[in-house]
Length: 306
Image 1 (cartoon, rainbow, N blue to C red):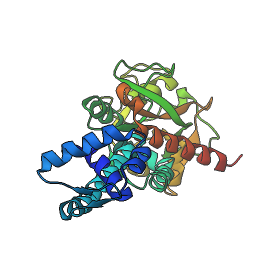
Image 2 (cartoon, rainbow, N blue to C red):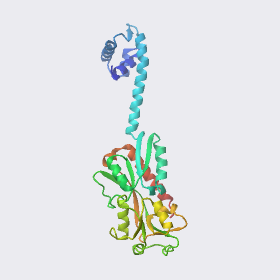
Image 3 (cartoon, rainbow, N blue to C red):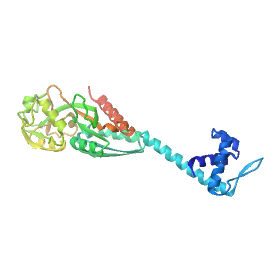
Image 4 (tube, rainbow, N blue to C red):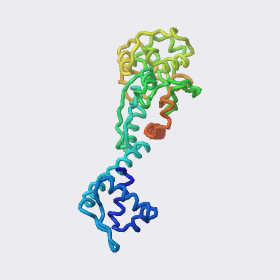
């Protein structure tokens, strides 16, 4: 028994007229009669009583009509659900993010995505940029929100593709009592005179390389007092007077009064990028999430004070 046969049967059962049923199915009447005959032979008993004046359902036909309607309705519902998956309206998405994204685009993108794709299960995983790249390559993440992880020329890797979502200035965080705390900006030379709270390149290669690029130094040239993974930990060490740290400007939202935030000379920037596998570029759900990222970044940029 095929779905096509059930649809033919239901047309005749609803119309109780082979001619009208054939027109409804956009076919001629003889092939329809042949298909109904085959279905009756398959089930082993007549489904219709036929006379020259009318067509009626047999008891078996009435039973099949009830069951077939439920079957076809369920098939249509499944087909619609599958279209929703193709269109990115249903499914699941696992997104990684660096902790600093909490202070820029992440809260708004979660709100936007859940309002626009309420039948997509969104799972957020806090990870460093390096960890995200590994998981993107393994397929454990669908999208990664990484920091400075791709060359500033815009080149992508053979496996991964990324696009800039948000860009902000880099700043120096120092204890409020530090000699640089009253400066309107600081130069790379001034920064290199200060012990620094830095980050391990193994976990944040893009960001570490960006800081080295901004300061015009090679790895090993910085005076490192401590290496930490999270900017909240870096701020704790800064507040304790252990050293200074270069962080994204959005850190202003969480610095305590004991820390001064000073722009770097020349206003160098750091970038958040949305990364995904090249083959995931056709995913409607990924595309919807990245669209929300751009919308969240635009709203954040518009709200910035002039």
